[in-house]
Length: 107
Image 1 (spheres, rainbow, N blue to C red):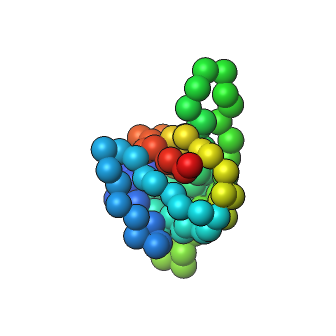
Image 2: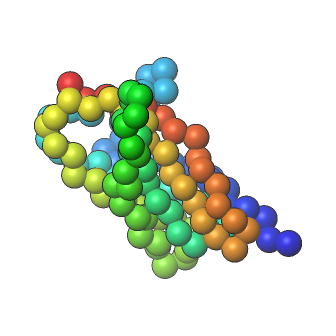
C-alpha cells in the first residue's frame, strides 16, 4: 500500500515571519509559496475566510518542479482587508491529506 502524501516544509518568497501562527501581508503584492512534499501528485492551496458561513476557495494549484517533490504557487493579493486561514491539500497515489492551516492577516 502506498503511503499518503506528506509535507516536508512550506516556505514563502519573500520570506515572511509567522507570529503565533499568523502571517501579516502588506499592501498589494505577490507572495510565492514553495511546498516540498513526498508522495504528492497534485497540490491545491485553499483560502478559508474566518467567519461563519464563509466558503473556502482555491487560490491556485501548485506547479510541480522537474524533480516532482516541490510545488510552487505565486499568489497576487489585493490591498483589501483579509482575515483567513491558508491550507494546502495534497493528493497522490496514497490518498489526500490536508496540511494544517496557518492564518493570513491583511489590513
